[in-house]
Image (cartoon, rainbow, N blue to C red; front, side, top):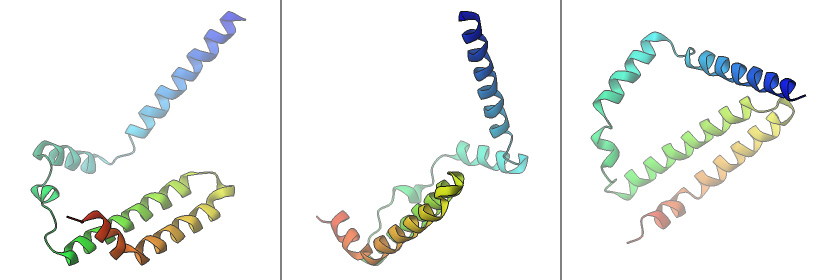
Length: 112
């Protein structure tokens, strides 16, 4: 029985290694090269500059809300098919709620 467990564990580890290898090979070479050069240059300075006006803060917040929706949609699509429709519907509802109260969120995040 102990030998059987060792074989199962070894097979699971081999499968995980193959899955990791397959995942790392999904990036096209030109994209991988671009990513390496961007990483070498470091973060853009604009990432560390505060938005100076309420309009700029709101614009950034709306971008972030949109990005959160895109991430949620991707997670839903990678999840179980049986839950996909409700997951996408919930993600869209959260997006609409966040966009509707974006000004309130901006004010809460930028109180002095």
